[in-house]
Image 1 (cartoon, rainbow, N blue to C red):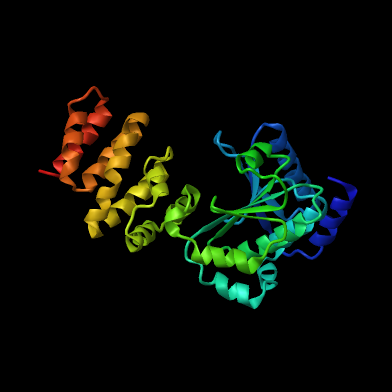
Image 2 (cartoon, helix red, strand yellow; image 1 turned 60 degrees about the vertical axis):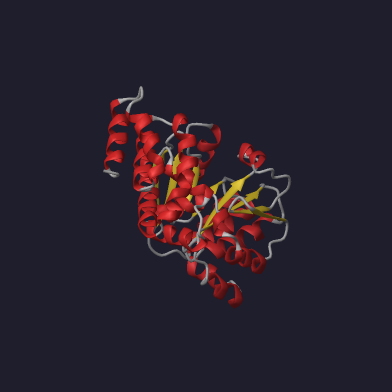
Length: 320
């Protein structure tokens, strides 16, 4: 951290009242140590900041989290430091800087929006883009923002085909490079096709405890969202459970729609572990579609573990 950054933080902290909590996902790699060092320096300069640390589960990248919906896979420094501090201390004031038309449009967002913005330390245009996006996410509603240093996390930038900064990506579907037009971005949030939402967006709905809402969204569209199938076989049990609850709602209200999961789930059956196999069998049973009976019988008579055999038998019992 430069002397200039330290001075900015010290001056900012003079106007901060109360405690501020931020999250930190720790990793042992170089960039994880850079982000951790920044957080430790920040808390020394601003003693009212409390860092809630957790170790990465092996898949999580190092990041700083602010509230439930903003994260930094970056070290805020130089011109990027001021917007970071602004959202830390007064989210309401930051959101209040948005044009009234944008604030009114944001109130109509009903589906989680996953935003990523790629920046670089020397980019002269990135701080303004980040400031605008932080203002969108500041109300802590359905907009989730991750600020990513594309030079520090070059593999993410490469995977997202980022060639210049700032680049903003919405739900893995839409992207903007250069100047950000807030009205256009929010319009896209409101008019996008929910069936094209990515796994991360649907996962947020599950994590918010709104499985019934997700089921209702699919019922209104008349089709199972492709990314929903990924949730049903997700490696994390809590995510699968939430998806299964959503499926139960759907199967109860729209039996014909429940049948749409049978073929794609069965196609994935052989490639997953026994726990996921058991959950797939549960879902097939919940579909109440007689066409799954031969599939369930083939498993109950097959060379599977006791856990999988038991799940197949329990699913078959739903048809007796």
